[in-house]
Length: 151
Length: 197
Image (cartoon, rainbow over all chains, first blue to last red; front, side, top):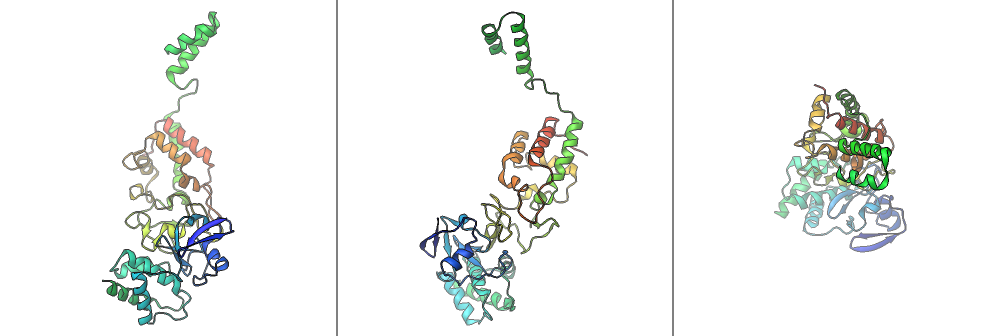
């Protein structure tokens, strides 16, 4: 039995320690806001927070995150999260939306560590999140917008 | 030496006892009992094989300047990652964002091991000749301040080093068995850590 702290709740899961966190979130806890895109840590659709840092839940095993604070898109909150969500809405960033949970989670991590990221910072930190609809320009714009709001 | 002399009269007597004492004294004195000394040539030969391990993708892929290489084909790591200010990546693209300290993830295919990260920049191995690599490895200023014994121990027990022999599917393990590699390290050290020019 694996005990995880997810979105502030203690969850007991009857899974092996090698189970990818994504499976636990979606299949066992019905937290389907986090998406499966590739299953190989190549697309970022599965991005969650582990102790505030972005993590690819398709790759991180549940055994690895026992005792850590896991946050999904459903529950991410705070000043930075609010600014990011607002910017995403104002700039109408989303097209199909499939990648966007992951994009938002990564953007929140970036802005939490760096209140005024440059384009190069955004390139480097958002590199792991890909968007098949090509909303990159809007994502970048929204991160800059959120940064201004946080200043 | 004194303890061998003090012990022998109590345990054995006569000529056999004296012989046993002399052999024990000789063993205690030179510290290597009856093993032959390792020559510089043997040390050099061992280094040649050690270098083939250090230059294998499992090792060299992370002994890079700013970004790791990936796979047996040593291509740039995809997605693109970089060292960052603390050797563990930049914000939202940390090594631990995808790699598990607990080990390889068979489902996602991402490799993992304790303290997964680029080697320190001082341990840049890419582009070195085998001679340069040799001199770097034995230099405490550039090998994490390790003595020869500490170097051997590192190769023997460090979990990230040992990952090279259990890298997960799709990655070639280091071709020389680990215990042979450790023996080669001991031979290299024992023969004076000889380096080619």
